[in-house]
Length: 258
Image (tube, rainbow, N blue to C red; front, side, top):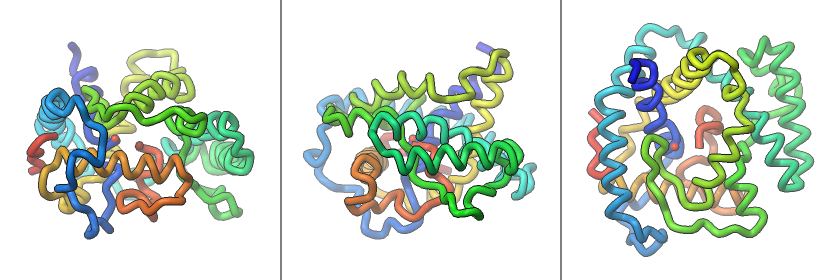
């Protein structure tokens, strides 16, 4: 296994789960009863959680710290904007599938403006002309809109928190991610790793809010955030509402985040 593959695999571990956590989480009860979330595979999930955390602790986090140390803020923000712009493609497709024509139009406009005037998305020009960034849409949300239930909670190796429905959705989301259409495999791998390392670097400070049983914290954060997204903000979201930085990255047992 080459070093790029190792780095890329580790880069997937915490980007999704940590992106669910925000600075305004004083109301989070990380010791909530397990019955609140259908988690029949908790033993297996916790084992995967520990595996994922090990990869993050020894590979991804050190790489993210190095990236943050050598990358100027303006460059890091530009990289974040580029990947956020690419994420509009999936939102467009899934908004259409959910009959959300307003959001589909907004995301289409954002993608066209930022890909051209915004120099492939480096600058969020669309926001300044009345096309604000909104929460993204993915196929897991589309399935929920079509009436498919969550199913059991799952902690996926390398990919982090999910459930049966959203896990299936990930397979479809692969085809709406422009990065996966890069012809050269090495370039594709490098771009994918950069995307997630960039995300992990932004989340270094977020670790301070994590407390209690970290497995339960991430599980509750994921499920609450997904409910918020599926219901288009019609429920309270302690983990994701009000954040512009982590909208595109949807993301442990006794996790040790040093």
